[in-house]
Figure 1 (cartoon, helix red, strand yellow):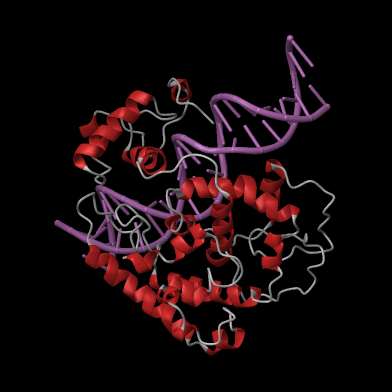
Figure 2: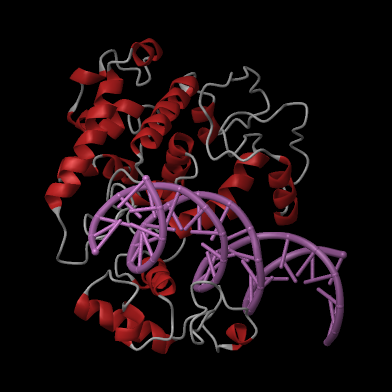
Length: 315
DNA sequence: AAAATCATCAACCGCGCCACG
DNA sequence: GCGTGGCGCGGTTGATGATTT
């Protein structure tokens, strides 16, 4: 963990477009700066990041302030080790959503997109690789190239690997799934990945991607309902300005689409939930995220998972 | 003990989206 | 329709501590 130290790191840093104006500070934040930012936001609320630094007496750009607040200073940010159930949730959401970190973070209370992204890159992707699973597609790696005896990729190797690969954020979900999963370790986690539902889930991901892309959605749901992402990446409302109606009406579009997916023949064929008719199921299916994608119903389900998946019910 | 290497994660960067004039 | 400003997102960098050689 890097401690906020002096501004030495900023001294030699070249100016960036954002901070090019009159010697704005860069690099690690000091406790004094944190205090200034936190007390200002406590008084005035989030938002208006462009003008915030000046008003708060900070020599930072608005972007930097926003990032610091969102990822570190917000009271709702949970610090510390990612728990096992959180890890499960991240894995499952990533399989569904790909690298949409803000979406994933919106489903995990107290965790930020940056934290989840870091955790994925440093822990989970390596973990999956070591288990013979492609972290991008969540499908078995090529058995020819996968050697469980080899250590997982180093950071440098991962970078090299990335360079070789075509740019792709998530699986299309339409690729063929190899039936060769014999190299997958026989543990609880991998039992899930060996599940025959995998194709159905990948289809769900594909459809979700398609819809999100077609609608221009950058987010689906807020977790905390106050400062979570908005629906189209628009201006965020400040504290006390939350517009519940907007949030609700926006998500209605998403939900109605997701609900419509439930009736898709493909999904019925896949029977992704191992439940004959997901429309007529349990209260938890009122969250289209749950009912459509089967999260929380198929396989094991942690309390955190239930909480995250049923958040819409509590609105 | 020193140097080299690895792992972690806060912070930065560029881009795209949307609202507004 | 076009330009600009504000914001948020995902990808990447690099400083720092930990571990290995």
